[in-house]
Length: 372
Image (tube, rainbow, N blue to C red; front, side):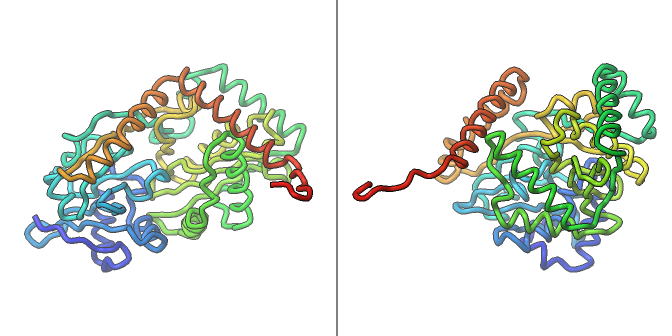
């Protein structure tokens, strides 16, 4: 097989069409983070984005998008921002993974949301994790029945809060696929506040991530689009979500809500209404991503699987990278896999977030003459 390296932006129309064809031919690749549109958008914003084009007997059989960082360190496209990566290829295609790295000029490649079981990467998988999904293949009502079976108490509580929110704050209305950039800015402001409040790094403090989100919001084609949903109580926005979709799958990305309405659990109320709107729009699945929140367990009606692993070629850079990354990855996996540890870590981060917020709002001490 022949492997050539290009920038996604430089792919010809015929190559982009082939990428879409390969993606649609394999249900396991039905994820917008694997779409050529996402790769091209990332390439506009990041100089280190590349794609390996794989040919066999003159025919393109695969695409491998990646990021090439210093010292030949390879990362999945979008890194920590994305929840799915892999080789977009004909089913059954298997490459020599180390030969692929050599062609990409990579010494090491870490992955943690790889489409599980891909022949090229399966030998290097160190762990496989479930990613819960809302599956509407049998219809919205069938999904809702599964949610009820998962936890009738949770569903009853959320429906009660939903009615209470509408009664006390104004009739509820969900806007699906809002094109209003001001609505997006409102959502991102909530999300930034959530990151800071819970002790996380504010992703939207990085201008390129804001620009990427805005570009994705402007994408509106049959095969790929940004989807912004917002739940209103009366005329007031209370909770929303921004994600990406293919023709049939929406991927969860940035959910957030106005904390003024926290007593009504507006985030979960929004998710229930978003699920109904997604099914009505013809989508077959909402991928909620692996790990994290308990609400995913009772909203799910199926699972996908993603894998973690590492490929390296013998080199000093790969050895240094292993010493710095592997222990951290193992700790993170252990924490995410154990609800009690996850809750404890979450409490620590939230405490840090409250302390950081308090310090940021504390009046500055005035300097006196001779003060240092």
